[in-house]
Image 1 (cartoon, rainbow, N blue to C red):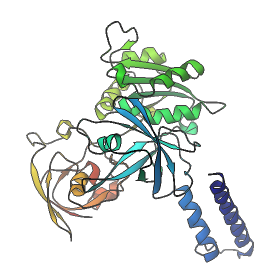
Image 2 (image 1 turned 135 degrees about the vertical axis):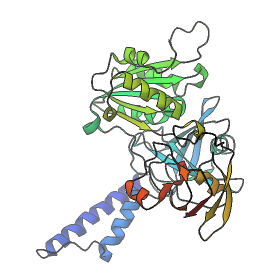
Image 3 (image 1 turned 30 degrees about the horizontal axis):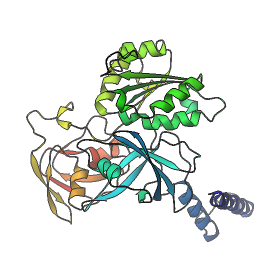
Image 4 (image 1 turned 90 degrees about the vertical axis):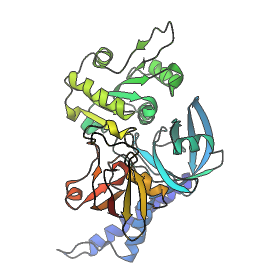
Length: 391
């Protein structure tokens, strides 16, 4: 890894050197030709190392976290691990029963480690998680995107007082941020409230207790909704009273939320009751809704099992269900659409809606220009009629 990093730094130095020479030769009023052969290859090679479109990872170790959760500790085998911000994710590509699909997973390891940790929790109705947990073995290879996402701590914007609200496997991006903070001389003050159904579901529990005892800047509160008899810790949910008691009242802290969609909705209501303004809240979306029929604005009486026909321009016609994201339906029929976040934010999976109507939850980050020209985010688009799309 050391030699690879040295090579990358040498490339950066060459870019600076070439750029300096071009600046000396450049005439007044003329810009630099960044497409010049001597410059272009160096730039492309360096950018690819900083922001790889794809990475090949080998599973080096599998760590059992809970009965339903494992961490896949991976090494990159096609180059050095790129820099990333603690809290970001990678999208993991898999083929299951002939279906090519992907899922994003936050990295729980910290930037600067020589490995990359992907912590995966099982889902009873899951498709990719059961495969990663039950089929992937030591030495297996995975293909992922490079690091992506905007859910990270930015000191210049977020200040030095942070409140993390985590639910279930939503602890993973916070674990990366906390592990990173533990290496810094002046870390922010962090209040972590971690909601869990039972004590058996707590991921990283022992490490969080150890870090909480070791560092004065970290305050860890575990909130258990179904505690065992005699439990003397905090019970219930991440409601306004629990949050206020843990942090001592709202006084300008930045709140970061990650967990199931139902938890995010509930916590946003509770923060509103505490008077926390929207610009002090950041949330990491966790994919499409588990039950889209319960989303505000879903047509009354339309069942998730209702089937429609989708004409895919120049390809084929497929049958889809109203309750399944269009992206998943396309993948099941062998039609691949590039995807990264699968939560309606990044727009990588957008397709053009030629005809028909779809439902997209309010959180879908569709740009106004996309709306104007008929583009939808297929990862959070649910058919409401027969469709005609162009991918």
